[in-house]
Amino acid sequence: RILITGALGQIGSELTTYLRKIYGESNVVASSKNREAGSKIVEEGPFAIVDVLDPGQIAEAVEKHEIDTIIHLAAILSAVGEANPTLAWKVNVEGLFHVLEVAREKGCAVFTPSSIAAFGPSTPKDQTPQDTLQRPTTMYGVTKVSGELLCDYYFKKFGVDTRGVRFPGLISYETLPGGGTTDYAVHIYYDAIQKGKFTCYLKEGTAMDMMYMPDALDAIVQLMEADPSRLIHRNAFNVTAMSFTPEKIYGEIQKHIPEFIMDYDVDPIRQSIADSWPNSLDDSAAREEWGWNPKYDLSSMTIDMLDKLRKKLGTK
Ligand code: VAH
Image (cartoon, rainbow, N blue to C red; front, top):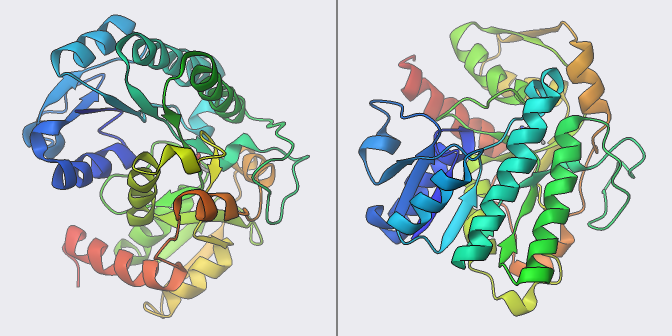
């Protein structure tokens, strides 16, 4: 069985439903530090209260539900992490450490995502290589590099089957992201439909890698089901589907909502975070080692996002 931590978050809420469809509802245990009454994730399948800062709760859920794979998503994202670096270190590194310790003791495999945030201003910014300099300047980035190294260590030293990808910004319509720097690329769709106007907190020309959530969910399943003998890398595969600037996504939405307007009100903190990250990743290692091949680009994502959001928001 699979245990998902952070199952009520932006990735977790969709991954739980997706994996329940593939492996069966009773085989996917959602977990979060609080129970969100009424959430379909809690009502539609097994749920456990797990605060990743409490190793006993992780071990108890693994034993009770006979877990063999932990998908560890509970994390503090970049912007929230920069405002509260101590919390980001505790949740992102100590939380991961507890998950890896339980996985070592109980024989579980572990998937946990890293991020493009694991790179810093001294990393080559265009077509960032799979193996390159990683000197991130955000606490979130420090926790992501630490996480990559911890997962590699647990694989090499203890044989724990750890795997992970460096996710770019993820765009989805089910659950809002929890305080990242790429979140503008989600909110722009909501505001285009609900307000016809969007104020962007990043300046024009700020290019970042992005991916539509359906491709992110496929990446997790494909990597976890990959033949381990083909994996040269394990815990930090660069994966991306597109790279765009605020004006590029604005232009794409305007093709469908011509009267949509965007202006800028730059947030210096999130601008400095975004400026420290790559403009575009080289994801050839993921393509070669486990067949990574995203389906959505900016145009097809925009069509699907606007269609699904209009249905969700009950607008025309
Ligand atoms: C963030 N969405 O903005 C996350 C992600 C690459 C970005 O790590 O912090």
